[in-house]
Amino acid sequence: MTELHWLGVRSLSEAYATHRLSPVEVVQALLQRIERHDPGLNSFIRLDAADILAQAREAERAIVAGRSLGPLHGVPVGLKDMIDVAGVPTTCHSKVMLGHVARSDAAVVGRLRQAGAILFGKLACHEFGWGGHSWDLPFPLARNPWNRDHHPGGSSSGCAAAVAAGFLPLALGTDSGGSVRNPASSCGLVGLKPTYGLVSRRGAFPLAYTLDHIGPLARSVEDAALVLDAIAGHDAQDPGSTSGPARGAAADLQRGIAGLRVGFVRHFHEQDMVADPEMAAALEHVADVLRDEGATVTDCRLPPLGEFVGVNRTILLAEAWAVHAPWLREQPEDYGRIMRGRAMAGAFLSGGDYVQAQRRRLELMSAVDDVFRDVDVLLLASAMDPPCRIDDPAEEARTYARQARLPFNVTGHPAVVAMCGLTRTGLPLSVQFAGRAFDEATLMRVAAAYERATAWHTKHPPLD
Amino acid sequence: MDDKTVMELARAAGLEKAARLFPDDVIAAARLAHTSAAGFTAPSEPAAEPWPPMSMRMP
Image 1 (cartoon, chains in turn orange, red):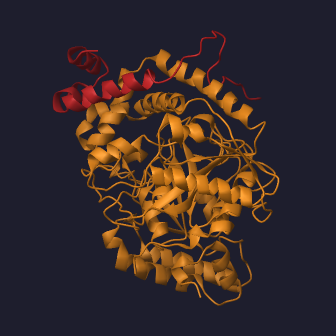
Image 2 (cartoon, helix red, strand yellow; image 1 turned 120 degrees about the vertical axis):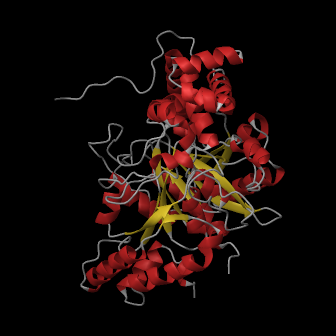
């Protein structure tokens, strides 16, 4: 039988419905596991056991009384500490925000409450979702459960560490250049960035208004899809919000992929940024698996990866400067060194630079849409390298930008990463799939088919 | 852009304190901005619009 801390949403929900498990039992077991293992991983910034147990008791009473709210009822979900919960501090892992207490719930938190989820603490991240692995922050840095000497990825680093370690089945992170998918890749998880506008950003601290997304980290494609379906939907208070698609992300998970057309974007990792050999070999194997499952896999080309990088960085620098300029002028010493250096960069861009990037962005969006006329889903690298050592800033700096996630922050298309192997040294390798705008159902269908065929999602870090 | 110019621009942007306390970070920020903006091809078509477009909502 699967150990309790590795159970996913469906298993928990079924166990609650048949009274084989209760939410209280589950959160007690998870709290014990966290107490035992998190001192070495630093995934949590804030954990209120009394509040968590109170939520679990309430869920238990409702489920026993036959008032189940759906598959997430009684299921713990962690939050990156950039997402507001009313009455709880949101620190963004920064000294700048230490005194800040959220006045209301983020839109996604409201939707999780409606679904009956248990809000299970605030998780470590890179400072303001961008500051890299700085050692000069008010909370310790999260570490990779697969090997604590290695980087867990970021910026939703605590989310990934906690889910991979079996502290939680689910977490919500934010993603402006890959910050859900990067740590999910580094920790062997599923990480989903939905279509821009599908999930409200209200109540998540902004990094870059037109690049920011909120998405789930989970141990299976189904779990990620179920969370997305719970948090998606129009929000009139988010100016970027749009109405969601008729079909949910979990609608087609069991359909298989016979006849689907997959475009393999090889030039990203073979020419534009040459990937580590183990990563490249793992991607080839993914393509073989998809063919075996009945999909047609053909090579296809997007604009050069460097074009997406330049556009993403220019927009991010300009928009982040707009957010942080007042604090950078008054209290630059309160930032970590990495975030301070990055956030000030927008001061040196012109208005014209920003507009040119947004004009080029529209061209890149059109180019990606054009490719989706011929294929249903794209297969491509997430990171070009396995996770590096946490105590090697030179290697972190080298590998930080060697990724192919940010194109979909630029274009807004949905993208998901999933584990696709282990290095010789036992660190996760990851593949990325991207889909048409608002077609999360097909995107997750492909990821689910790959997951079923390979079962990498059943591998866990050697913590115990 | 030389370091002296960077510092003048930083002060003009209100970053006097950062320029005084963290001059290396300010110079690194200016370099990051330059490489980012030089990292993509600006559209040659004058009519190419930026994203997101200006749009109006029905009252």
